[in-house]
Image (spheres, rainbow, N blue to C red):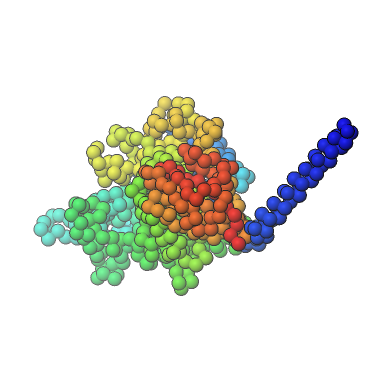
Length: 610
Ligand code: FRU
Ligand code: MG
Ligand code: CA
């Protein structure tokens, strides 16, 4: 009896065990049968070039890391921290200008295009940076600033002195007589500088005006002069020979202005905007008809693309890229990719739509519309890109809301194409407060006064990087830093976010990791608003995988009907979630509806689309 009981017991266990295994197998067969044939490996997909789906990080060198205690970031500081980019999952960095400069516009006024600025280090420091970056598998892009030089550059000094070969390096013009006053002189046209006031400055030495679309200390090159065109190629060639992987190209819409030859030998006035809120001399008083977006400028972009392509052919290695910068309407922006005559332009123009078109009052529908705008206008086969900030604009958490940091990073990382990160965004850095006394930005100083400067100042987005909670946020051991450290560094810093169980940095890392999957590099996309508050983005590779982002961009919570999300079949699993979400990675989502807190973002993996 005992014996048979025991035997029965063993048998029962064996039978139960077999049943369980059989059950699991049946479930698996049913489940996969239900889902269509499982794809064990991603479908055959074309290989992408290194830049086509990269994470591109903008370093603002002056504020990244100070290695020598002078309160100013430098190249050694960057080199010592290149591992940060590897840890974050970044593929390529571009650095705001590191060249010799009087620093009126913090490096965008270059006095020697072939030298490193002394506060940032030496040529050797640059070579070391490049060597280590390449060893770590990182690409390094430089900022190429073709529109203007510093008035302290040799080019300008020689041009002002009418030295042979340099007379026409800049845009020089005679004064106009003042009909009301014989002894007075007037500038050649009513053109207004980006930093306020006339775009023309009188040179006593040369007895002529020169053009400066930016600061007085940033004279505009004359791009109708073939010698200037050649010099630009020489500059690019020099840095490519050093090993740079390409360029971010600055301020392109302002490259060329109306040609006097087309206007009876003079410079035509820009039409007036008629907008009562602008005073004469204020940006916005004119419509920049003759000073911005001139079609001829694109010829230069095509030439430079041709140059970097031919450089690759002659020298081998990986693709050298040009990413063009400029704030322009969608048509003029898209032209930087190339035109329908077959002229190829930049690898991509930077997409500033998240900066220019969206704010903290934008609805989910606005987000959807803005995202689809780029994707709709982009030429066939081109590579899109996304970014929420840069060194010229208030930081994203300050422009939007601080609870949107992870949702914005999710959009950036999960949309097709290149994801651009501005220094500090990976830890959710916000604008720093910079008093009028501490203000250094030329735009704020020239456009504003002690009451209005914050409308224009770019200092708040340029305060030093928050490494840890030590003095100066670990940025510098000096007594002073060139801009103040933002006060919130004790709470918002990289060291803390590496330790915290949930942090913006960890969300960033998780998203970058997810991004390396084929669904995100190669998948189809669908973007739509579910309501005024919540947006969805679906990325899918049929029969292989589906990734869904739900993002409540509003100030209120929102309950959404999940069956309205295209291609989302439940149950789905949470892969990444914003740090204030109650859902965490691994959670299952299966209800008919889902309530998202204000700013909440969750990324789900769902059943493949058959
Ligand atoms: C981008 C920018 C600014 C700079 C200007 C002139 O618009 O890079 O930061 O002041 O161009 O170079
Ligand atoms: Mg330093
Ligand atoms: Ca120009």
